[in-house]
Length: 197
Image (tube, rainbow, N blue to C red; front, top):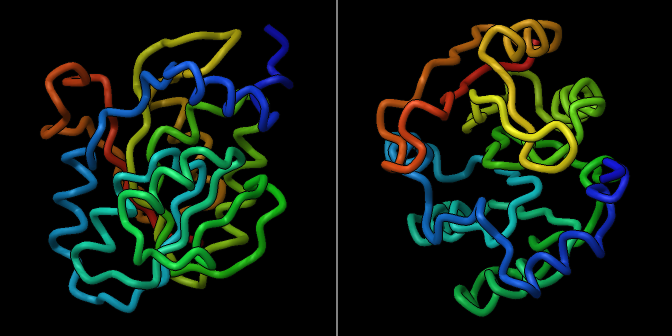
């Protein structure tokens, strides 16, 4: 597969239409839920890029975080979130390419988006995340730490590879195997937390 295809809206919209959404576990992932549960500042401006059906955004919203922005290149998952949470503001549902997005956020949540991008774009991803974060802003979430596909998403990697990559743009990097992953993903997820340099 030409990895350019995975950057196109039609590719993802077709996968939603066919129900080919193996990355979607149907609820907020436990490591992210437990991280959110200890956050005290409900005013944080939060972005979830490549959010898909955005179960993390739904969980945040239902727990009092109203400054949550959801971005996806495909319309169906944004529609699914609005159907599940009708009070979620449509102005905070962004149908766009992540690399074109403008804004400034306190926290960006990473959940299966990084591994959906072709590896050649990982430096571009990091640069964009750094651009979107406020000073002292945080990137938090999950990365797969297993070799996955090299010709279609999900694309994997190792902790060492990720550390070498993220150290260029972030500091106080915490990157450890998630102890609270769902059973099918035990041992294959890294929980990450880091600050913009």
